[in-house]
Image (cartoon, rainbow, N blue to C red; front, side, top):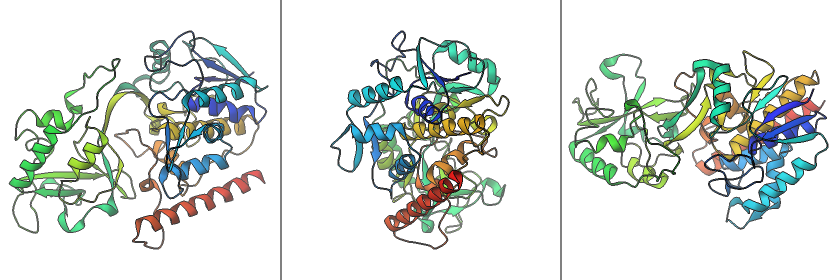
Length: 434
């Protein structure tokens, strides 16, 4: 019985390609051109609806490293992107229509892939990879929700920015939990009255992202963008996420006027998120305004805050490290629904879902990439059962395990991390082939 892949976006096409190239028959279901989501306009597969850029090329960047790993894993999407690239400095940008046309042609002409047009409203029998993306149709969303119950999420993605620990100025912050409840679990960035008022003024005047027409900006109070809350009054955020109550700055012995708290994002403590800083500000504005926070003047933002419609599942509770559904082993998920964020991240998850389903069907060992690889680290993040407040994540150097030797120069450190990643990947693939 052929494998059903639902959705011919980046992840779905990649998953179908990986399966088909391993001799597995695939039925690829795509609702276009019979039905379009509000964001899609082009008939072809793998349509890029936002930017036409797949980010940086250099391997010492997170995106460049992930793309190189994908090349070594036989990625269809990267092959087509390289063939349809347009000049974009150090980034890999593509001619959108040529790129989509090339992916569509390769998928449609593959002897092991049957393309079936039309909306899928129920989960098919047999082995399935669900890769319907953040704008999954209402009917199929209902089918997935019926399968997963309350673990299935469909709402505005409200995420706070994340910074790397080693980019925080330790001389300007202190570690403490409010009222000493805990083991100094938070990094605290203290502000005096003048610093706070300057920050508040910049925050309320910063430029926000313009929402698309199909997005409805109705959010829960707990997901209120920090800039919206700040506009309610000068002290609104000082009595909210920046409240200094229960904290004393050991350098002064006094309670600060306001405090921005950062909380660990991963077990290694290499990433910290800004507590209560869900935001809809444009990315350059986030960099400008949040760098005014004492201690974050030179912070490396590994993920900016976002607030937009997103449909994703609570992967840490639901999926294993092969993107397989724990409660029903015939079903895999891929793409942004798994909580990876970005074009290449979505594509990469499709690679692993496709490979691992093929491995299982052929009674072979799964491909579990080491955490030293970018894709392995990203997969570990979305399948980490210890994560409770799960939010989507894109590739970034902060999710990789640190090097044994301390390298102060960031460029040199990132290059060393990338070289280690590719060496680990090559060793893993060699072992798998043997």
